[in-house]
Image 1 (cartoon, one colour):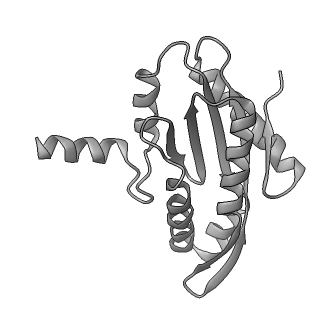
Image 2: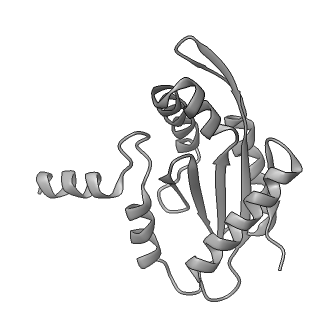
Length: 168
């Protein structure tokens, strides 16, 4: 039984941050109720590629670990799930969360993650951008992720450390 749990952990958890990974997110969607009220927050770190390219992947990995640790504070067993889905992209899915609560959550996450990080000998200021999508009726996770991703790009255009809610 312990071996099975260990394999499940390897399959569903990101080895770098300890957060759930893309497989974990797919598993979450498979078990999601059809009409559940959800908020999807799609978060991306600003300037991550340039940090990785100029300072090396080791520094990028340290940054991802720091941000992952800060994001894990927002995880809640039944209400909030946090996933690192690749590179510097994170998805937060909050159950029973309306738009106002999702916006408050986005502000809290930005307050915790937008800061100076001491990574070895490098002191870097890093901010994030968050896009928000809210489920209406039947949960369509492809639509929710696409809308949140689109809203995240809108947030990036607004400036550093901002969020945006997807508008139809």
